[in-house]
Length: 332
Image (cartoon, rainbow, N blue to C red; front, side):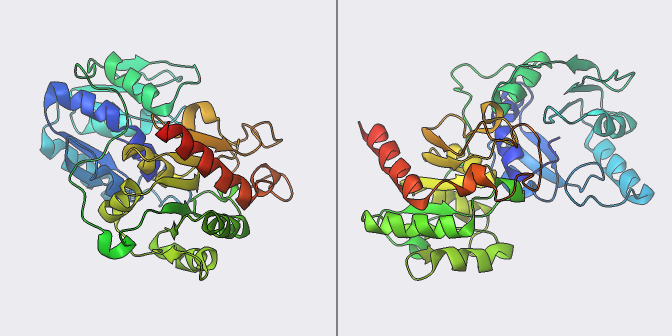
């Protein structure tokens, strides 16, 4: 189970591969915002989508019929083991209760709270380690060590679709301006500056975003970039990212998608959560943003500091310069 956003699901990918190495293809229970990314993961045979009332920014009300239908669906699968992946500030116990009601034989999760009869493996890890490594540690404690030779990096299933008709054949750098959490967004005017600064350096920019971000991507792209806002489902978006020279984005799911396809990232990272845990994992990246800002560690959704200076003070020129630095390092 990983019930959060797409980036959270992608970060659980290496741990899911480890489980599959012992048990065969895995069924993933994911939330609506993570299910599409879950279908990209190697070794995931099936994705069950459920909107949990204890997860997300606008969770649904608790519905008895909905909960019991999920319990029945899990029970019908005859699952022997479940691993509940959560972030460090979340509890696995609500999910574990439903899994126990469904008759799952062995349940594992990180928990600082006493789990009673809900967990068979109660793991603890307090260190600031990357989330992908934290998930791998839980899988290992549950008895699912990685396959020999698995490098622990994020990955998606291949082959990816051909998106040349969308992007054209010339090299490009992606600017992805959106994020589900406002405090983690680089201001749109700065994103537009980056598009223009890339063009001044002779680099073609492509702007990406979801169906609900078309107005934002159009504003950022203007007439200086190709606007793909709302034009890609997850497999196509993965292919667009895989073909890019680099990606400029905030701390959001597409940063982890870039890592999963091996594309370098310029990360506009707000310190409301620690970069040690959430920076792009396993790929070359440059971190921009004031990591010592007053909002550090608050987990705030809306920036608590007027003007959002931790990110708004980073210019488009600085991001374009970071792309040049990153690509020079990769090619050397």
